[in-house]
Image (cartoon, rainbow, N blue to C red; front, side, top):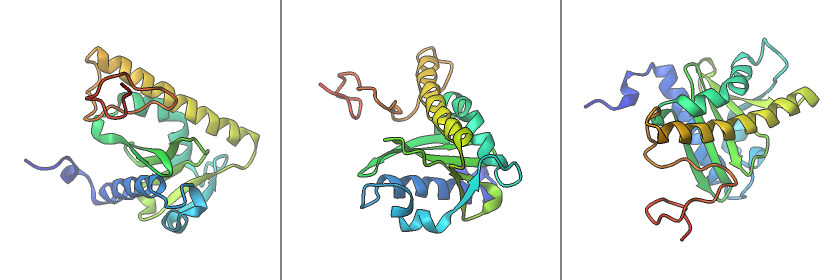
Length: 182
């Protein structure tokens, strides 16, 4: 049986691999912090202003659509990595992937579009509107996870191989669930 990635276009496979590597790099950063503290992330990130439609179409889409993608995407299209740098989430959409430290949420949002090959966009905080959009992004991602769990409980969204953590939520006391408290 062919792996799911085999059907993807080479640009999409490259983008997916980059996004998942960025998530691992951020989560396992030896310094335990995000952004410029990681050499790999700094070498592939290009800062863009969210307000610039020319520079940041995919970034704008990622910010606007995060709730829907988190809530309804197939399990192989999203995941989380936890390490010294905290919990980092990645979400794949049709033409871009988005990676962000979720716990703690630092405001860093990386968007990897197919057409940037081995680079990603780092959304640059260029004012109050962008700051508000970044805060709204976090809230929408949390809401998307809560809604995903709700729909999974009703068999309307495929179950994730490992349950995705919602920031600030303590796992139920189930020893079979990673991260649960007994």
